[in-house]
Amino acid sequence: MNENEGLKREIGLWGLISNNINITVGAGIFILPVIVAERLGTGSILAYLICGLLILLITLCFAEIGTKITRSGGSYSYIEEAFGKYAGFLTTNIFIFGGAVMANAAVANGLADTLAYFFPLFKIELIRVLFFFLMFAGFAYLNVRGVGKAMVMVNFNTIAKLTPLLLIALFGWLFISPSNLEWEFTPALSDIGEMSLILIFAFVGAETALNVSGEIKDPRRTIPKGIMLSVLGIVILYILIQYTVQGVLGESMINYKDAPLAEAARRMIGPAGATIVVIGASFAMFGNLSGMVLNMPRIMFAAARDRVIVPGSLARIHTRYSTPHVAIIIYACLGFIFATIGEFKQLALLSSSSFLLIYLGVVLAVIKYRALRKDNGNSFKIPGGYTIPVISAIAIIWFLSNLPLNELLAMAIFLAFLSVVYLVLKLIPGRSK
Image 1 (cartoon, helix red, strand yellow):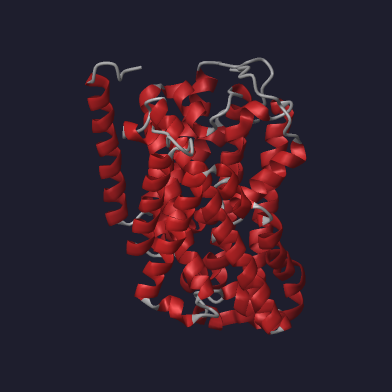
Image 2 (cartoon, rainbow, N blue to C red):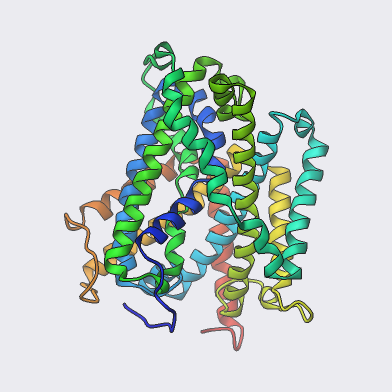
């Protein structure tokens, strides 16, 4: 389906690649290396390869469906077109309240943990709660006052976070101790599965750039090339970072859970290296949070306006500032609450699971469109027939099967709740669409 929405198609190949990298590379890679290494040791590289392979397969599915349905909306548009309003309702709510809110809460904890490397007071629970409150309250205040003020904090993010990562990836090999990379044991498949489910948090996000599909030049060529090149680059970057940090720190890596990359940089070039990484990581996480609190409430506003999300009050606009103040305040409050009651690993796990559910919907949409032979005549097609979509679906289900029982139960209750809400809304006069 190729829809003309009246938007100018001005985003080219490099613009899409840059957008993908900026969205994807964030808090996860600054924190996750030590979490994965703690369980898998030198076998951590297996989790990166598995996650990288899965993301590449899913990316191919996004490339195909993204050239069949080229209107804005990304995953929401693909799933709603394929499976209807109910699926679209679930997708939007899972994305916002499951994926985005949990991701923001995880990043907030990651930011506090990183700052604790230099300022140990961030390990004190009361200080962390106060920090979260001031940060989310500040984001809410700026966004309610107007988007122009909020945009100031979103600038220069990419350079700030990529500089320390490239520093470690390109020069860290000079400081590697080969004994730190010796293969000590082969991790159990269950351990690899559980760690991969957490690690996937660092890989999700590239598909978000397809929310602007209606503004991409020549989507049939640009989308497949853009997302494949960006994801491949991210996978290579992540593997180099894990390999380098593990090679530099060895078994002592688990002693630096708050900021493993900072410690690796300190051993490479001294305190200045640690400072560069902590500043870069802080910019990356703070910028990610500010950008999400800027963008996500507006998605909530639009979804409430279009009646694909609850409550309807999220569609209210401030009489003075003309901003979706209710959506902004609720989103910021949710971020603060979950940041306070959760911790990075748990929140990253819940966010990853939410994104994987959405990915599963997109993969199934590709399979359905193929079965129905729906094609706009000018779309990209994954080679190999159903092979890649089917493998992707099976892999996602395997990933989700590694979800701990409590989180799996919470996810099931959340889906059941959303289903009941959807049925109730359908029965309210004037609410059905």
